[in-house]
Length: 299
Image (cartoon, rainbow, N blue to C red; front, side):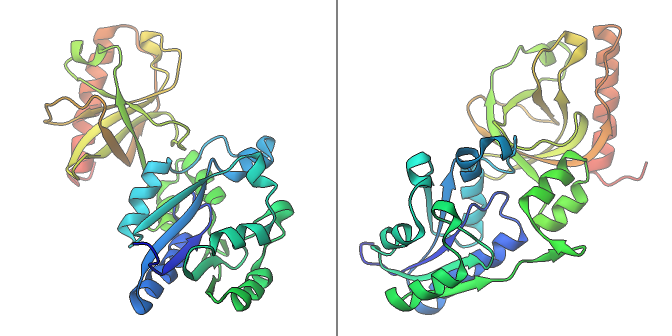
């Protein structure tokens, strides 16, 4: 492994949308063509949360682990998340590239509008100069456009907040999913006949609160249909926002395992019911409707 040529995609890559995928594809193609490893260098936490926290998004499109899984499916063999803090933010562009190219870097792929280093001093012209000086190939990728504007993580987050998952899917190049670990809840669902997996999604961007027909991907890749509630659970006096998923025709212990949820269709807004029995009746109706949606029936 030591001394293996590296072909690197650089960037934050929140969401790994179609623009990011174009950058990653250049690094993967270079590795296939010239030999070596296709790698991705990213930053955690999101740099804007360190540099200008008041301007930072409150939610992101992926956790770090989720991002790693997505890019691996795109052909990335080496995933390098660099810890971004105030000291890192003070590093100038030249020092960053000097440190990066201490390794046998043969290709650097970036979006052509990417800026980096202290005061955003590094840009494409700087990288062109460094490529000649240090002997790596530079792949600068033009932005991907959608409906007259460049695809961006900001646009995708807004589409998801608005519940416009079809638009988000078009910019992501895949259905939007949220990944998290199953944690222990109050087990109320079991008493209602609908056991749920409580998902810790961190600061991932969620669609609007309410009830959704979903598809869950379990550890190992098995896909299971289900129904999910996003929100405060007002009928049981919930005080914090949660994601609870009931998986159809499934039995097993999911505690501590990772679960990836895809939102197929919005079924209804969250509501407060007059009694637990009324809630149970509504959950049964929601589950029936979700099954029909996921089986492709027209309502």
